Image (cartoon, rainbow, N blue to C red; front, side, top):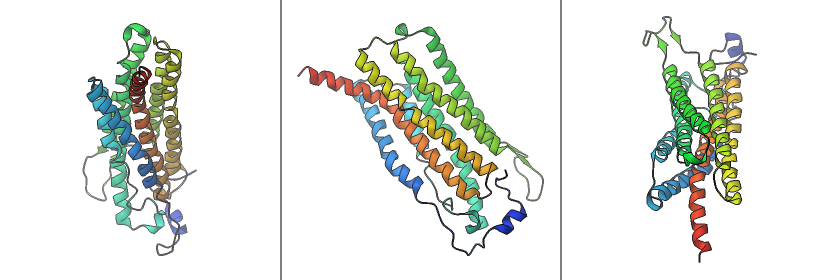
Length: 287
């Protein structure tokens, strides 16, 4: 298999002429943003309203989630020809694509990092007297792991030796395919950990059985983000190892990227909404 951003001349020669009409992708990235973007915003602002206005218990995890959402909407971009085949685009637009991809990589790293850190910090809200110390240790290990990996992979993105050099000279940059696949795999592991941990934590809490089931059902929804993360890894693999039609294949990466972070943001906000719903159910039950 072969693919990536440096096609051989034999492959370039086999492409249709740039003036030939070629199919384009749909507006799927925009559609996902329109559908799930408002849902993420509604759940976020409902969460903030419940925490800061009703419960008066706004904490660090709420502020971290707010920072995550800011980064998320910087990802929703399929301009610069990502909906087209590579042979349909001028060189200037391909260069703009590479710059945009670099920015998207940074925003994705921090958007997903903030979401997972918010979730793990949220777990610190649980009454530590009701859960095993082992789970507390795992939460802290997960939090430190997510923070360090976010910082490390952000720095790696900008690695280049030398930092600036004239055109035509030799240079050495980071291994983009390896970097993206490794970070995505680690990120998927963190997703699974952050989703699975509350299933054990909540089951040990002193709550009525129906509420335990309801609360755990909310966390189980987070596995959807894990599944989408896996699909994103496959899309990245295709970009660098299957096809030289990078813009066309990158569109799938963008689609799974924005879907993953928006679904993850919604899932991260749901536990706070469950607490709000339980409060109003109790109020209605006393009427």
